[in-house]
Length: 266
Image (cartoon, rainbow, N blue to C red; front, side, top):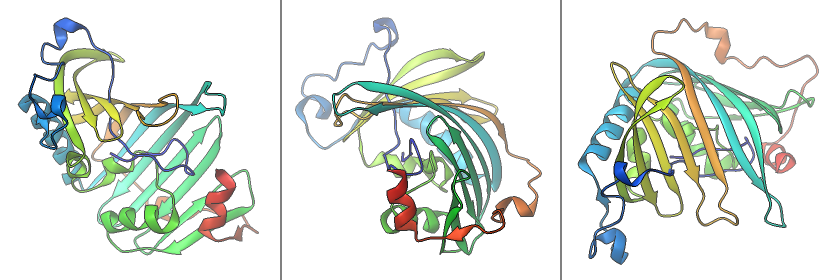
């Protein structure tokens, strides 16, 4: 899945983590399997694929929801040293074409609005904002903004109609790790190996099939930085006021091109 540690640097979302040998009897790819030989055919434990797919379908079928995520992410210095930073993210979504994302973190704050007609990005620490026309459907908007505007809201893969489809094509190997506690919740844990990243995801098995936690390791980047999100406060019957999706900009805010906004945050 795709995510961003900030609104400036685009990354790809998915996940990995550590596990105890007793919980991962199938953690080592079998000899001759695609994961061991490099064959393109994925090897995914049925249990891992089924529950993650069900979770993705549950979220993707929801007409509206809100959630909160506490995030930590690594920033790698030219020397190779990893520095860890923290942020929080609040998301409000209404299909087919409304989204609000508020990001507050150690490296700055961002607000993002999508009203079915345009996308707007604002940095509260500056007098500038960017806004561009956007397709009326949420999936089409998300598909447009990364390649054309060079940014994407963090955890954006969870916002698609079919989140699992976003990641399935890159999965090479996946397996189940049993149940683990995430902030007092008993969640099923799964680990996956993808083309460029390893990822681990914790899933609440119900009655609401929701992600509890996500850890991503960017395996092909120097020092293998990580991104972690712990999800709370999922609400699938929220009362979201229509103005939430309308840009709330201060008087005198100056519009600048998205390319300038992106470059300024890198």
